[in-house]
Image (cartoon, rainbow, N blue to C red; front, top):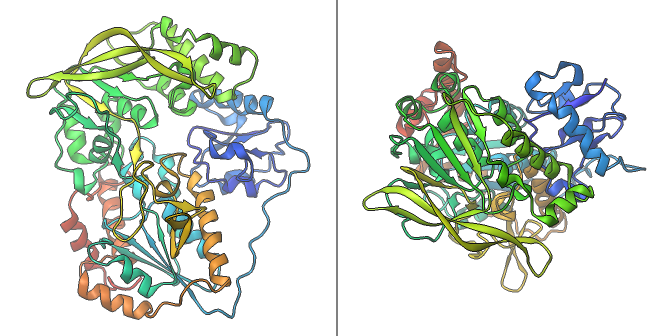
Amino acid sequence: MAYVITQACCNDASCVSACPVNCIHPTPEEAEFATTEMLYIEPQACIDCGACVDACPVNAIFPEDQLTESLSRYREINADYYTRHPLPSGWIPLTPATPPVRDLGTLRVAIVGAGPAACYAAEELLKRSDVEVEMFEKLPTPWGLVRAGVAPDHPGTKVVTEMFDWSLGRDAFQFHLNVEVGNHVTHADLLAHHHAVIYAVGASSDRALGIPGEDLSGSHAATEFVAWYNGHPDYADRAFDLSGERAVIVGNGNVAVDVARILTMDPDDLARTDIADHALAALRKSNIREVVLLGRRGPAQAAYTTPEFLALGDLPGVDVVIDPTEVELDDKSQALIDAGAVEPAVAMKVRLAQEFAQRTANPDNKRIVFRYLLSPNEIHGTERADGVTVVANELVEDASGALAARPTDRTERIEAALVLRSIGYRGRPLAGVPFDERRGVIPNDRGRVVVGAGETLDGVYVTGWIKRGPSGVIGTNKTCAKETVARIVEDFEAKRLPAPALGRKDLSKLLARRRPERISRRGWEAIDEAERRRGLASGRPRVKMMTDTAEMVAVGRKRRGLFGN
């Protein structure tokens, strides 16, 4: 019997190093790891030891004979990967970390941000005994997009925070929550108190469509909608018009799929999750019956991952609707699939789309409609949005041989009272740090921040989406952070990092003056405990108070030792 990795896979590769026979791929050392949708277990090589199950931070691995009906397809998905990627011979497991140099004193590192990228970086640093880590987060709560971005009906994905909680629970690590770098403390302050600063601030803004009508009421970024239903305090007061029967989402990546699912799910099912109370109340009154997702290219180039697409087929009371004519592939894509020249995940996406297209819709069900080869060119309405004009595309080869979408002269109008753009995240510039406006990232060389013609900025580093752009899943940040931390350790041991003039006690005094409302680990534990206690009373994992910063600060301050970790 083999074990099987399923939908909740976070790609952090903990299972890779745990496997004694090295049958889980792609590994962080393999090129495919940078783009893989998930990890896969080779069924013939698996020895059924269960080590991967214990190592998995999100409970995504099951014995194949215990797969539920909804997860049974993953047996095929895991096996298909190895038809194209047979196990390499002579695979060498990860080598243990080099012991720290002991005669250089304590390496002090500030990390800005408290999401997965930040936490993986802290975890990697804390493998050394000569490190102190201070983590700064402008919100009163940690975990970033795991808390404020992962859909509430995906609790398995959020389990990774338990691993972070455990690995960061030591004296060498301190939380400084409710502290905004650039406001309460400056970049210069951080460098004065630390050898190195890691910016792990993610990509918090969205990309614009650049079409007429985009600024109409009723037209929003999907990132705002996600933050709203997850209870992000900066978005709790947003209002979304759910009075119409149709919503249009521009884009078909995983965020778009999440939004479509939340808009069509039974609110009673959502009521068992940690969705924000204000969002649940609004969704109970929603009239939306159909959500249309627009993809500018075909099903072979769709941005959603196979696990997220597959899971839609099990959504109670919701049909996935695809016009059979829209899953007829272009000649090049079909030829590549027929020749077995594409990744199994791509072939599976096309196969699933074709299967969905053959299903008969129930007129009583809500609908998630996937449209391909369409791009919006105008959002209509006077005071508010009431529809979208889309143009049909055709796929043509560009100079590199890749397939690009080219607009034709065929257009159609889709009526909708709610239009959400979901075409990608983008980083924002930070005071005192270089920024690449074109790419929306901080320019860097393997994590070292660079200025001008490649000159590195001493003591300043990046990891996560602000380093590489918005790509990958939660676990992708682990390998990214490992690379950045390796640069810091290399620079520290080469004595290239100026020693900080001030230490941990000085930092505490500074924060006490500048931000008396700072929340430490103990304060966060009090907030976490209160949220879970409220959830227990209503059969939910937690009831977030994230929408009320003042309440969170008040709860955090009740816990004695607010300013101690």
